[in-house]
Length: 444
Image (cartoon, rainbow, N blue to C red; front, top):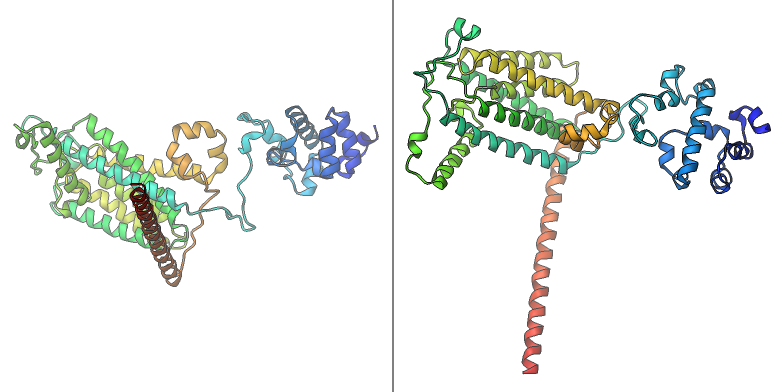
């Protein structure tokens, strides 16, 4: 056939139609593709997986779509050098559309869009980074709920702390060789407060602050939720003899279950209000595996270093030094065992790195989207609209002020409109009731 002897790149829409007709496509599909949309050889060669989910190909019958898909892949395989010359694929066969089609993880009809690269600008930055304020609010509610659960669990484990006379501190390499420093734990919390202040400044001026808030809240909530489980299932003995830890059960004897729950909730509120910090007057025991202070320090350190430019290496060095000194202060105060601190640092750092590895590489996240949704439901929901690495871009103080004023104005306008609609609805109901009363009087 003449159409098959010519180079596919030079096919006209008529030659393309003749070729596809020879491959078995129906006349209606040929008319839609070649007559109505003028698909020629170059267009046929450059079709990708995304095109098969859009108009006009989506209007084809299932048989013709499958057949066209197979034909396109065969042509792209046989004309890879031509496609490379057009810039559709790179020079290496592994990067071609055909190679993607034959990767082992191919589950959906047309790749389920799982091998389509995110939309990037000319400088390689993602074009689609919506703030999704609703998701940021949901992540905030999530971390607030987790902190409440953590505070309540801390009350429970405090009442289950082992008797210090029967169960002395466990052997620990660090604690056995470093003397107790009474002021060290307060210094750890001061260090954490300073790191939190730095993180708030980064959040305030970062252009993508809502994405950062969402990630910070979701990761922090997840780690502390895991901590609730570990400190609840096993109660370790008190790590230092200087700690005066006694269960509060004697205060609850003779009380009803409702009174016990009320007292525990009030104690949990005190812990929650003080953020579990000793400088806020909170003293608890039994919450050892693993260290919540180490989780907070490590999370802040990783977020500060990730979302500030690389050239500010003095800040990164300072952040890591505060993280390490904070951990040293925890151990020097004999408030936690060494294993508590090690496990806390490892879990927090690994979770942060795994989360951002998936978030920064859409192919890793999307290659098995079903499994990702099952095993990482929060991640799948919160990162669904983020394509690529979040750039470290910042607003000026004037821009931050203008955005804040606009946000307050929007809140005021929405509140005024809500009040106006409530009053209008109330007036409508009152008018209906008065009309009904007047009509009832006339009938009587």
